[in-house]
Length: 314
Ligand SMILES: Nc1ncnc2c1ncn2[C@@H]1O[C@H](COP(=O)(O)OP(=O)(O)OP(=O)(O)O)[C@@H](O)[C@H]1O
Ligand SMILES: [Mg+2]
Image 1 (spheres, rainbow, N blue to C red):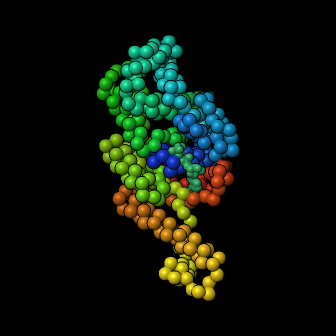
Image 2: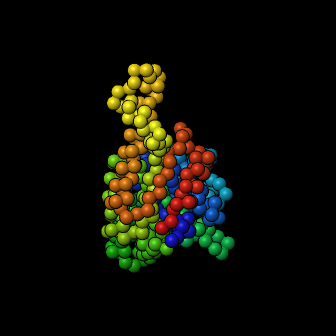
Image 3: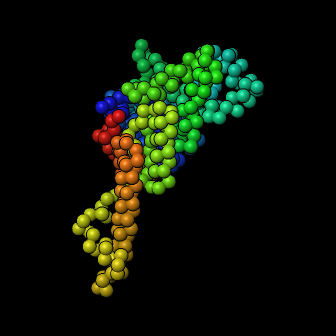
């Protein structure tokens, strides 16, 4: 068993809004606590990563967010340019290749290429050297949502097939090898214990683990509703309020019990969905609690990081 935090690259995906960025930040914290040097590579116009560490939004330049944790927010255009630069190591060639109109038109016509530039840049950071060793032990790619992730992950194969020679193919081959190497990489799916995200998680796991041949990380089930209302000692009261409250109960008590009954139903639905996910995907499940805060920050990220560190092996 390898700890997730011992890997070199983790690509995080899942349905939009399920907590990919939050889980990425928590993983970064868990890895940094284990002494790793981590880079979070995000690509989001509304950049939440900085705030999760109590810092301003992260820009296109690598910035430090916490000891051992750097982050960069990559724009597709910037990534294409910069990845071109990093790959081809010449501004001139990059301009000719990526910025001339015909080339741009061609590249824009390749679906998923923008996302591939993001993947390419994240991969490049796994190889980046500083003081004679790798600058980062772990690069976390806060990746595209389920709908776009497979597109991004297919591009290395498409490049190798279309142009087997040259720097693009050389890197695409290395990226492909890294993504499929379970000793170094994992594709991590985040979901909520809700119907639609769970369905997308199953579809994504099927494509990523099947056709794409990627080693899957554990399934992170984020923001689980609290189990408190499902305590056995509450059951008689909560069952009773559903069938017909006692006349002697005050309206306040009835309202409170109805609230608790709702929370219990919510948690039970979530438990069923998690059980179904366990049946359908042979993946370890890492449940993360819904934390009680309107604006998540370093304290909540730390809380989630501890859960991940305790559970997350591949
Ligand atoms: N465990 C949690 N407990 C409570 N709230 C959470 C939890 N995880 C995420 N959230 C909240 O859910 C919302 C979505 O989280 P986040 O931005 O991490 O999701 P995302 O998948 O990255 O979304 P997007 O698709 O917009 O990139 C945020 O408001 C976040 O604060
Ligand atoms: Mg996000």
